Length: 512
Image (tube, rainbow, N blue to C red; front, side, top):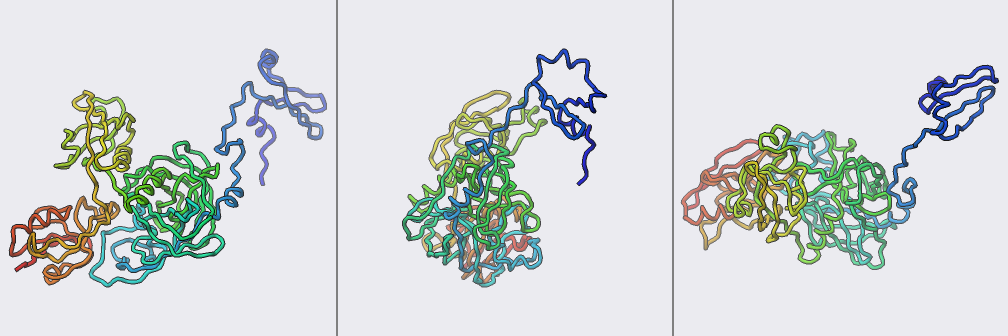
């Protein structure tokens, strides 16, 4: 190791005064005048050289650590105390093959059993939903979770148990239990499991609002199947709004998270769970320094709904919003680029009923200031349908208050049995569901319905599972009711606009 020159090292440390056997001294003239203002010097001897390093007048205060005693977090104690409450989750089921073509996956990743847990990672893979009519194929996968009550209640990610027919939970003592999925919420990516056991170890839950950027964090999970793996880092940012996941104000960290960590806990330096590890930003499929966790208060709110009703519901305002920049802010007469700029209001929505207009800037919601548009999406998404919200709006360089009663957002995973029935019109033969946010992002679509299953007239016309239905008879569709409205008129045929593997085509479907 190279050593710095002596005088350079000391200048960095403070004021320099050097003496050699009393024959040489260097003493700044201003030092005598400042004696009353400085602390006594500390003398360090090294051979014939005496070094006097003067302490500064007012040393900067030490930065308090999140560990309450002011010490570096005791990661060993956290792992020993709460590691047994972290579980491994293995799943088995059937799903449509993803395929590599058009998705931009690294060679071989399409067959990786862990890839399924990283669908929707920003920047990972391209292309839209696919199915191509291919048969369902069996899959097995692995993730993580953690126990929050000693009678067997477990939190994990919704994408960990998606499409799973069998879910097995493995404890740190290697005992295994068959788990029941009480419910999952694709919007926030939270799922709740239960195993039949008593007296289990549990984690201690914390408050993410007390967390600050720079605070230490610890992740425990099973990356690539390596159980009870601990990694540490710091909080890199808070309140991140990711593409396709605007409802969740993610905690960003640099703790190493890899496939298999999904659903595992993120601990604070106090040993409290403050998040669920959910996503990474990666161009390779592996950890590249950016990991994102769902705040535990968000997860617990979803958990309460799932335990009570078996599902979670989310409020909907019905606006499309974007961030402001300085130029936009100035054009609207605002001093700062804070708030959510309304670019579109959905007809018949809660926003339309409340009188919101394109060009409005929402600056506050329920009295809390909005710095970015993602904050509005998070507040609205975590509110219940029917709940009233108070909005402060900047319109035509004037402030006004608006109250809106939120509507309900349709579950992203809700499947529709068929687009028509005998009472309402001819049967089209399609089983459909709404596009997930990440699917919209990947396919670059604003709406549409994914074809889950196809029979009858639609199958004979050439519609395939995995197609995205965009319009019927030239009318864009985003809900099953719009299709049923067309079929009520008893048409002899309909023209369906579908997107398949990135290409859009019209398919005529005779219904007679």
